[in-house]
Length: 211
Image (cartoon, rainbow, N blue to C red; front, top):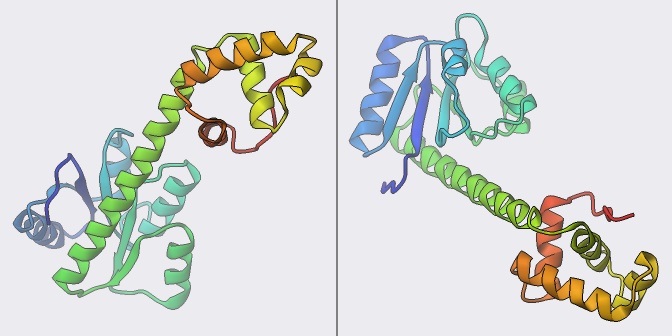
């Protein structure tokens, strides 16, 4: 498995021998690891900049693995999670998958099965981070717009023509075209379709923000 970034497998298991065994397996596959004996220990050291996936045991001292997954989910922390347990049942599997688990593995599991799940989780994490980078880039460009350009962007992405935008903002069509051209340049949008896609990423509700 080739990993070209800082993706890390974060292993949370209260059994020292299992932690070390899993860490050795990941190391043999060329993967970085960090190990934790409890959910609380992992959460205390959590940094949103951390990339990779979480290999999480269900039975832990203090906060259980399922409780930790729920807490991460509710907090909006999108790190992909692979659940592992020796005591799983279908209700637990359904609950874990509904909360976004990438995989649910029953101990003892096959090494290759685990490595495949980790690879899938890494790909998912990269996709999430790319999407986040795109949104931040669009937001940064939006910050360069003046108030009128923001209004024009909101209205044209809502489907209004230049004349309709002009009437709504009580400006001339020529002035709207000027603002529109400046806005498109600042947003680095070559077409209206490009602009609409950008606006949807930062305004998923689809409601125009112009008055």
